Length: 571
Image (cartoon, rainbow, N blue to C red; front, top):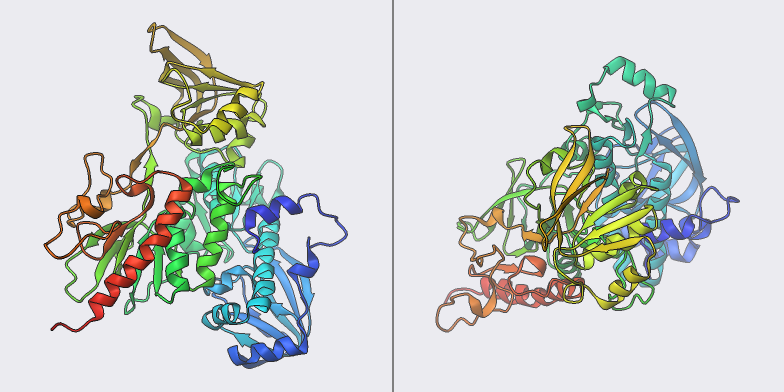
């Protein structure tokens, strides 16, 4: 089984320090002459002189190099000018990490030591190799993922974040990078000399935290996620003349499932997501009722595997890219997705998998404290901020239960506030039992949070809640409030395109759509032929990870049917 970023990272925490790289033999396997011979049909010979760079940090990598002779020094370089030797690789070894499946920028430098002969396998041929040579491909894939794990551990090649670890900007950008499995490291200007020098040079105001130093040395002041992604090369330029078979909007479990199955069956697939792969499921601390994982798995670990699989089969992952609107006119036979940068992505079919956005309760000054004590997910980053504190968590569904159990391992006490009088109708039984067994989780029923107090633009300090039975209000000091009160469908980008939604905004599919006589509706097709909907965004879906993954697989058959019919000549 192919490992994923989160799982491997957790497993390696206690590894022996005898090697700088945990699982060294799996991370840097040696290829036999016979294996190299099998790989030759996928690549081309390349020669390098002493001192030549095979790849450089921050520049698009050309693919995977197989070393035939000579040695290559791999070094880490950050935007502050620090260069750290990582490893020397020689004949029989290969140079690449998971980003080279899709031609992403290199995260390290590779420099020839003496004359070097290589076999260069470009990204599209590397993906073909992984599929055609299954046993060899499994070893290579595992190594590519483990190398990214090590880069994340070391912060190699990624941006340097400078600022207080508890500032809202630091927490926001750290969460973005972690959710996308991207290396980075954080420097505190109080303790680090280089950071202090940059602070003195740029004199940031509190609104500028954090300063971000990209690998090329450029400095950004509290950038947006999109600005940061462009600065570090996460977003690839759109091929303007390319028309995909299918464009998937959303990379939660449903979107990732669609991408894996469609790409593995030969369809040209593009996946767009506004923030990170995984969706809401990716933020789940632990999922214990998903088939095949009896000990449970984190949402990030589960979706990271699917994200890697989709890249293995050639899906173009465009993250973070926001889809602003859908053009269904199909003047040239293709739908058009207008992106936030003004570009238009063209595809013959569309899968709506944009899921839902976290619902915000009607609290007057809620926005003032978002990212400053109010959180909509519970990751290790937020858990670090509330260590040994009392926290308040609002919600009674599975996501709330998973978060409460996770936070109970970090916070001194978790006060779980539920509007209703019980959990049985909204939460899985195993989670209820887990919560009841936790000595530091307190359940507060028939209650709702009504007001927040604190210093605007600084931090949350107090929370007020009200009993829905007696109307009595109480106030207590809390610096962290976690909100899991449901979600609203992320379908605003469909306005005006003809795709039917129900009263709550979820996409209507199948028999609920009015189809012309003689054209029975596909169960997952919307009111616009060629546009399908899967997962939480679809009206009537079961709103479970397993259901979303199943729908993502199911829709591929409908895609083949639609694309096949569209390709038939008119009679």
